[in-house]
Image (cartoon, rainbow, N blue to C red; front, side, top):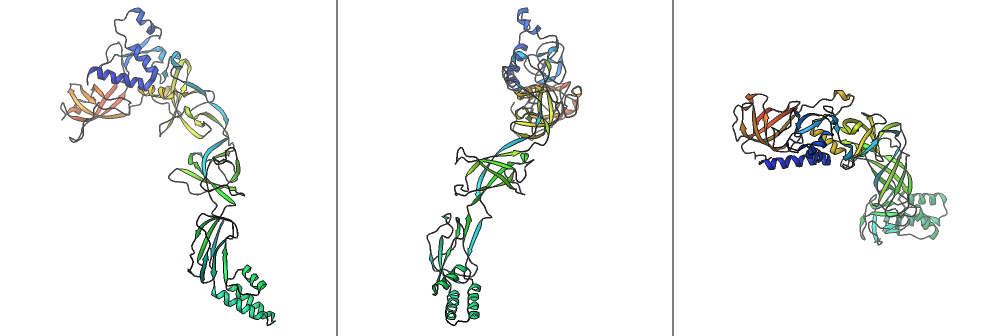
Length: 498
């Protein structure tokens, strides 16, 4: 890699990491050594120079300015006004506005909140009517019905011929002329035991004639889910003819993120707004919190029952749902946008005096309405960065500043000494070091380039030669980057280009 390419890559990584602040510092540090006093005047305003350093190897300090021994760039001065060796990032107040930084106070307030979630309407599976054949028979006629038709209560479905009912009716009518009440009562009981509906028995008694056909009707109003009869079919006793789902009420199935489920309970008030009915608000209560969560979406399933007297609420419609949760306790609150979540922990950038910012680990509680509870790590009245904190976090990582952990005093913050890995190729071997063209050290935020590394032990180079492709492990401490592990890469593995 040429010197110009290396310098371009380094400058680009700095600008991406620290934004306008990084550009400001790089511009100040790249002045030629022969600059006159007028050119150097802005540097004097920043106070005493403590030491010089390479931004890509911030742990290594130098007493004099000059060119970095690690790469083709000038060393950068660290001023006393920037906080020296403290575990904080300093930003000139004059450029804070250019970075778009905004501070927010750590406040104490009520944890009461409401939660906005989405839901959809579904049929109430408790309001279901199943129509069955009461006795063996034949289907004489099927009315023009199909699945998903909306039916009124009493709507005809099919005409059935049941031979056993015809015989029972004939016996009953024959005994009416005998005048024996006991025999007549026994004949009526026989019709009931044969499965004849009470309405059909009453019709036989009124008309005095045999009713050969029985018209099967819908017992409730609703949507026809299933119709399993065709003309000419033979039916067995107990065979299902139709299934109807009522529409007097519908279920609103609500998906609540599992992290937001705390505080939900049955009977809790719910407000629903449907795009199909703009401007209307439907109020109801939580009927049930279902025992099994949705594994695909990681949500809790909450059921709300809505009245549907006019039948306009149709299954499948979507709704925006507001769940009101009661206040549990006062808590420390910060804006949700102020939190940097890495997956393993949560951080905030704590604002201190004179434009200094410190990364602090926090333990979070419930989150709602753009606010999140802070259970540990901050105190009331402190200021955190709510906008632009990612630029500060990048600068803190670039300088090797460790995060102040939970329960850790600021004075106890130390530089982390983790082992960082990359792949590359040996370009040169020296007595106490090695020149490498390496890929990015992802855990350091360091891009690929060619540079010289010192060795923890000369024995690490045994069996290696120039041109070998290697996997390197370096330790970042107060003395800079030090190779502690060197391994051959398989010959079939492609070289990682810096």
